[in-house]
Length: 528
Image (cartoon, rainbow, N blue to C red; front, side, top):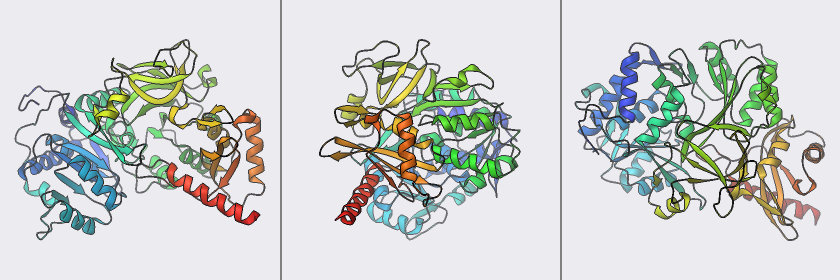
């Protein structure tokens, strides 16, 4: 850690350089507020100095619990400019989840803007009597500070806290295999390189809309934050409904539209069919790594025939690994939908077998990556990090895929999710993609459930546009027969009104398994 070096490159200096370069240009806009780059520079500087004034030191950890919005962005960069490590978490996290993260991270402070922030702050003060707590209201009794008051009365940052590229910048928690959240430490190098890779594809004329949760990497440091480095504008939508998103995309002339995941893409396509929209300002559509059903991709190509469609591959542990851009009227549009492209600058991709030995092009195995955006470690879990990274520095992604003759990466599934059924191995993604092509299916997940004859039974759970659709299960099974080999067919298809999701917005597989068990129990009772 090096302090007061005027030329040190880190995440904060990258952000400040852009903020000062673009000055009076609008950086952030919401329905009720906006910030120019100069205002963003000023306010984040005051937050940083305010945090230092209350005793936070470089390297201290500060949890940020706030919904998507201008306050989240100002607090995120204010924390980073103070030299502290920012730990964003979902504002819908329960008190128990929050306490677990505060304990695991050994945080020195928290900036909190949850719906239940009064009682949550009270709980935090009881559990962590010395912690710095900042909300939108001062509370003398609980020694809670007010962020807006801090901005108003604190001078700008006196001296930049110039950390080195190896120093930690942010910690993102993600669901672990044991059910406990894992803290993934991202260095300043990881953040700088990731934002730089994305910013180089944007311009100061571009306008993005923040759809993904900012508490997740895809919604902040590997997504919308890149526009702040490029000098464009970021729109904060009033809510995340498809109607609101599409109205604000048109109102603010958004140039890059993020259409992942399938549930949003399907609703968006339906909205566009039913409404007359002017989207002539859109320059690019974007999809992050995840299941891209071919029917969805083809429908997007049909509705947006003249617009590039970019698919990218990344994860919480490492961002911006690969990307592929389907160009209008280009033969590449016939490429399989599981294509996620070429490695980005600085990144390497190889495919290995179960023994960690690199295998020939075209063969399927585990994807290993080498990239400057890779995480440093799992917080407090040295053993997991050791097992995840090879001796020569390559990261085991847990994804399976293959490289074609040109070095283009195709995703095939996840090694830890393979279903072993009747002696055969099946990737859930392949079954999910088949089911997702049905026009009634809104969302789908496929799991392997214990079975006395098959070891694991391929089991699908879907949500539908019309849950009362007649013979829908028969239709879905027929679709699967057309798309899949017999051993890959679902043994059961369950219909539910909603698939449960965790704090990161991902489908909660543990809760889905419980839903399946309850539905199977009800069916057995009816049969008896």
